[in-house]
Image (tube, rainbow, N blue to C red; front, side, top):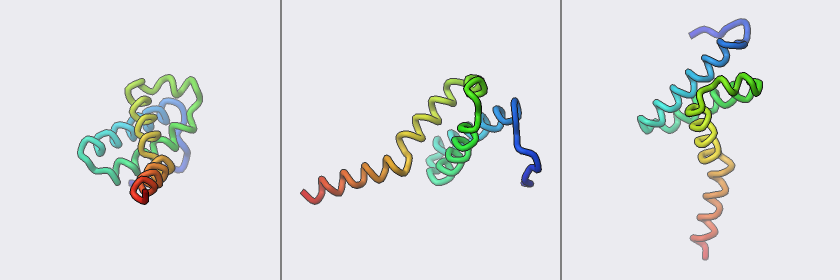
Length: 91
């Protein structure tokens, strides 16, 4: 796969974000967590470059999945959960 010389914009960017979210979802369904995390992170990075109007063009199902997985399984949330568990174990 070759890198593009020009960054994606407009409809091409929206299609790429949707594609990456769908790929991440397929990895999630296949229980391939590491691959899912990588694709989700790439999709989220591109998603955060979109304007509000462009974000509204992403299907709601994909937006909700991306937001839910990103909040639930972000590294900061996991470390807080692990810290809480360690605190409980040490009691």
